[in-house]
Image (cartoon, rainbow, N blue to C red):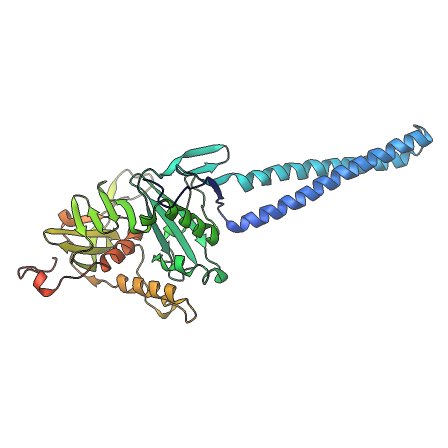
Length: 374
């Protein structure tokens, strides 16, 4: 893949687990520096006074003063040692985790360790923005055929208007969805200020302007699930999003029987029965038919608190209302196993939004023998 946006200069973006920790660590470093410099100054002053006293009055004069000055010097030395150690430790915490972005791709750095490239710019990649209903938490998913990178951001009230376009790109996920707690390759939180996340997205779009129309996933069997601009590929099946197609959202439930132990010391096993609720997206175009399936992480809420507030920028409000409409699903029977394509639940709204933009078939395009999915 060539850089269609021009030459991409190397850059480094700091990514800490908590953006507030950055300001706190910087303030701590300033105080440590003040204490360290002050302690060294006191030590030098004490040494100077002791030297002048020794030359002026001899070695045996003013013994009490020398002891007092020695105690002050010892305290200053201890303070310098403690502040120096804290300074070094805080400095390492401030600079140990980074995203490294250069002409070749994205890598993650933690301390002295630098991981292999998470995203290789020589290969196609996709960008998917996910956010909760209030749009005060967003996560960027950079997906490739091999892996995905998740970078989160907290949205402050004064960020909403300035970054309204970015927030309107997000697809809605439940407030308690684990994907909103973005983590890096080391398992720790990976978040950026929203302005830095916007800069990261613009940098990636400079590499490939079509990345926002692309998403790379895989189903439970490892088969590729790819949204690539005007095409949705589900394994060996392909759907042209520029041509008429049928799709609908459904919910269904199935029983499962996990194996449970009757006690910690009892080797005997027993079976318990439970119910799982799934969300599904049925799609058909010509002879190609498939059902995207994922476990319903939480029941969607359509209460008034979920609706956009009156002062919400229109771009964000429109995106939230679109997602509320796409969440609407009717109960249906479980689809046949051979049609199922299991995906991660947080990407279901993303794929539904792509299907929703495709044209719908007219009555003359639908064969008379077509029947609803059973």
